[in-house]
Image 1 (spheres, rainbow, N blue to C red):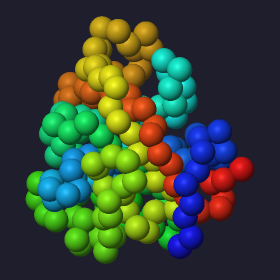
Image 2 (image 1 turned 90 degrees about the vertical axis):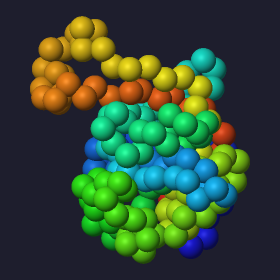
Image 3 (image 1 turned 120 degrees about the horizontal axis):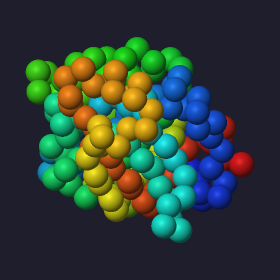
Image 4 (image 1 turned 60 degrees about the horizontal axis):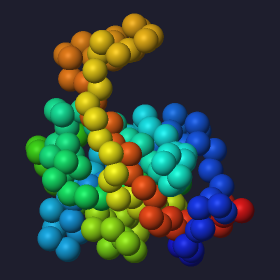
Length: 175
């Protein structure tokens, strides 16, 4: 797969489709130390905040990836071709506490260009982020009370904003 570094002003992505239909693998931890975990994410955003390009992700405290995203300064997002959809479903349904889902998936973690968290060789798009803000969701702040139905166990997400420091991808992601 021929991936190139993408200047953010040249990144081409249908943001809604990427999150809602295609999903990302969120990986946090340290590749060199062999301490990282991955999970599928379908809720998040990409944009500009504090004059910086950012990716925003949410992780429930009950997820195994939670300790990694809290204990390390970076995370990555990887997008894959449609043929990898079953692998993303797997990463979203099995916990890294219970099995080594990365080795069972057949995906290959590799060093990222600028952050400690790894990316995957098979990804069509990789976005590398350095954390710059986090906060816990507070249910009393939900203006739309229907949001609370996503939290029957009161396991409210923690929100993370990461400055995008590098992106790489195949031709379809480049303007």
